[in-house]
Amino acid sequence: MKKAILGKKLGMTRIFDENDIAVPVTVVQCGPMTVVDTRTVENNGYSAVVCAYEEIKEGKLNKPEAGLYKKVKAKPARFLREFRYENAADYSVGSVIDCEMFADGDMVDVSGMTKGRGFTGVIKRWNHHRLKMTHGTGPVHRSVGSTGANSNPSRRIKNLKMPGQYGHEKVTIQNLKVVKVDKARNVLLIRGAVPGPKGGLVTVKETVK
Image (cartoon, rainbow, N blue to C red):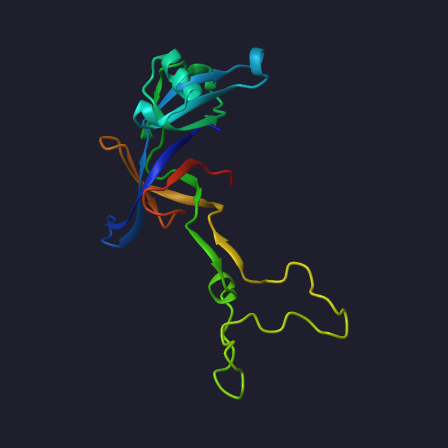
């Protein structure tokens, strides 16, 4: 992996290309990340860097976390993530990684946590149709309906789409295009939608396809 960075989803807007065609984009504030630790082949068996993102007050950290930042003389951060860059050996503790590693036209994969919606029914969770509103359907218009035959196999089949927990899961959208890189603001404009709510943490990395 050559390119990867943490960012915060700021929201969606649109820009116009050279042909005056509206392009929907998601604004992602990427970095800057600070390298606070390294992994080496000699000590860990692989090469990687540990990066901190989004500064916070020291009082919000526990003692082990605060000790890590104090050891490397870095400012406390909310998130710690490990990236296995191909050139990880080129980074040292204190190095800063920002959105300059990306360029206009790059294809990326974006991962994030979707909005949590709690316990939901099959209509919202699986886009099922509701039942009839007439002919004695009763007060179950938004229920799941039949869940199987009572003769054969006389049981509910596996993986049946039922009500349950919906959302709050990691989702990755592949092959999104970086429309514009704003290095002055550390912002990437990525075509289309990315997972998560406004203010949610996302990971932007070069596409695997």
